Length: 368
Image (cartoon, rainbow, N blue to C red; front, side, top):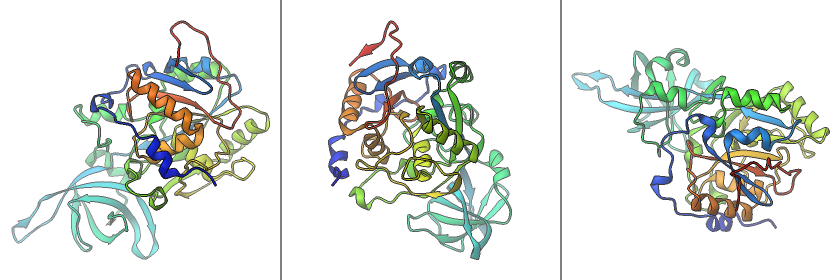
């Protein structure tokens, strides 16, 4: 039997002062700190990444783009009554044939019953169903996606105090390579990359491909009971033939696959075969990677520092091993790393995989 995920999660628990939750990203983006976690722990700056990787390594990014999914809606005025505001967080467009098209799942605050009408700007929606997790199904009379830029705001994580304008966040809470709209949260490991850093990686001979996984609101949902009872929200992913071919070719040639973000890991592992090859295609995934799960595809993982009690903390423990993650988080707490979406980063070696991150041996590198 593998390790008990509940016991692992309890052992990985840590107390984090609010002051350590990053409220702004590093400027420039690649000035954030980067902890390398393998046989030993080293401390770098994120812009060191090209020197830490090897020519021939394959970086896999998640190119999903965050949509302005938070909308202040209003109830219709009937006989002089109503007109109050309702906060809507659109989650994703749903395929429900019996309801027709233009149906979205959404969280409403306060929640509304089926049959209620809402207006998002000048766009009417009707509540046509309730999902098990409390989300509502909204049916629009037309495609709402082209109108979100005008009526919505970016859905920042609940632990970020949004002091800046929405226009500022639309640039900052987005990766520089984001292309496919659909996420309600950024794949935050990618926030550290700049166009200049991408150019340096290319010049070093490091290949780059992309997958798409649209991040859902469930990414913020903590595990409140037993791990076995935790329900993962479905998220849409797609892997092109070109990306699958590049990943499979790298593996066949003994080159390392580097996943940028836990969402990229989840996309790759959702399409992985028993031998670690990747199959192109698209679909919904509820994959839940916990200690004892064999990670087949990536050899290295770029990721941020995650919430205690979260599914993502279990994923990185499954990837790098519980002991390494415990040591890494102890070091992060002791050495002033900034946590969560806008914080610092780690480069994790897979516990059982081809690893050996190169150490550039430059001045200022510390070992823990």
